[in-house]
Image 1 (cartoon, helix red, strand yellow):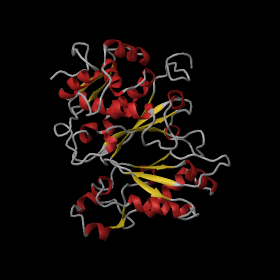
Image 2 (spheres, rainbow, N blue to C red):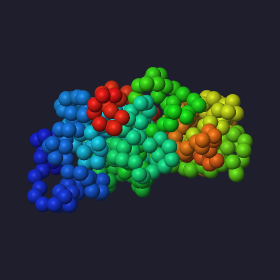
Image 3 (cartoon, one colour):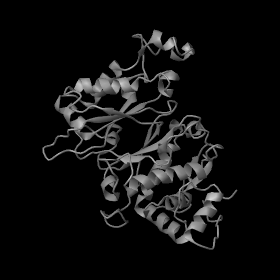
Image 4 (cartoon, rainbow, N blue to C red):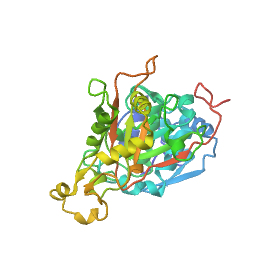
Length: 369
């Protein structure tokens, strides 16, 4: 079956916008939602904004092993509704999720509900309008919504992730439609994720993470004023016996996304990001006897619980802390403190890749930066 991902595969449809969408829907090229028709001129504009050749190969997308050229990525970005200025972020996201460490070949066809989440860092967040604050995981922001959606369309059209065929998720989850947000670096009291991973602050990056759900945790001042008690709430959320991270033998990473208000309060209490990770690690998990009363595959846990506690991760650094969501008042405080726990596929490691440094104007279009 032809896909709308090559200059040799051109679908000619006469009729309305709806007719074009329905023709693509019938061929399995969409996520079920309406798409922007990837006409040649739209695709050419998208390719031009990438700063690369249309035929540059970025990656091979497992498990179907479709070749992700810049042109093919551009086709899917157009369909998703991306502005041309977003294409460098989409390309970096494809590069990251196709890194062998990420194990896309394992998670794309899995029965697990896992989706690919993109976390954007660096100057490009502000230049193209990535939401890092209130509602950053939800609707209303074109950049977040369409960049994440472009990744899903690429997983379908190049990776073979068609639900019920190449994507066997038992339930799936809404994040498989789109999952992209930025980190709040401007108010962040700690080093942002890309700096923590060795990139200069002024370099833009995309981190791909294998997230299979979100668990909200209310840690507001009405609940408790004490930072460590707030963290105990998060540690409790991390303790899920049925999650891949714990069930498969304490593997991979987990993500914690905390609102800016909580991050500022924790830092004001003298806690570094490393302190937060260590506290969460020390206070999450089950006694081994409780785990083995439920889980029978004891062999998976050999050597993972020297203190008698089985945790979702094997060391504090496998807890990834990201600051996003919420907003500060003029006084630098936020009444509502929340944290979102994001378990992962387990057999996967997040990967951070740099965004190609093309000139992007403050209006979000190619030009002078």
